[in-house]
Amino acid sequence: MTPEHWTTATQELAKRDKVMHKLISCFKGAALCSHGDAYTTLVRSIVGQQISVQAAESVWKKIITTVPEITPYAVHRTQEDVLRGCGLSQRKVVYLHDLSIHFINKSLSESKWQKMDDEALILELTKVKGIGRWTAEMFLIFHMLRLDVLPMNDLGLKRALSIHYNANQPIGELKIRTISEIWKPWRSVATWYLWRSLDSLPVDY
Image (cartoon, rainbow, N blue to C red; front, side, top):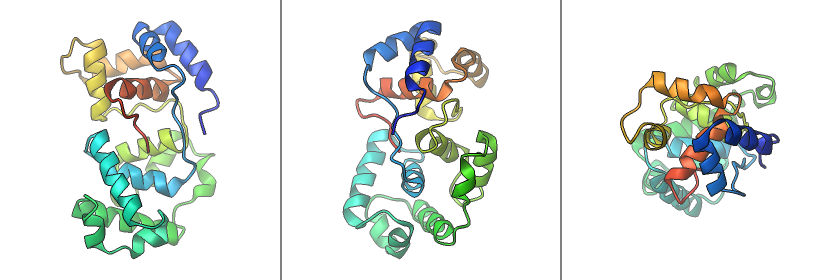
């Protein structure tokens, strides 16, 4: 499923920002997509923490080959050494088991998420072990399809901004906020195109 206002967002971004115009033109027909399963998206976000898109994809392929189905019960029943064998760190294995317990116990209130604003939902998700702000932001972008999320601490976003907006020099938080001001209320969309510019493999959670 693609966000409802994706076309409007891309049109407005292309008009406001020359870099966005170029990137959107380069990747015509490409779009952010939700897989429609909250648990799977959170698992993939944890898998992708602090590693490259390619490395995350490699680990994910091993997981889906090893674990028959990606459900809270199936992942929770999978032995730690089996998950470690897929390329997960010990810490990420603990995080996945803890996440599974939250879903099994229904301690995450999925029914309320659509009515919660971004910050409230981030607060709810970060109560789970292993889910920090970055992981929650990935969930908002890739599952909830919230279109105005700016993941300030995302390394890929910083790298792309450095390349496209700062002559390959490191970029600070103030400049990121200044650049992204023109993207509102479509900062998730702009971020997605910047990610797309870095890798032939699209970012996917």
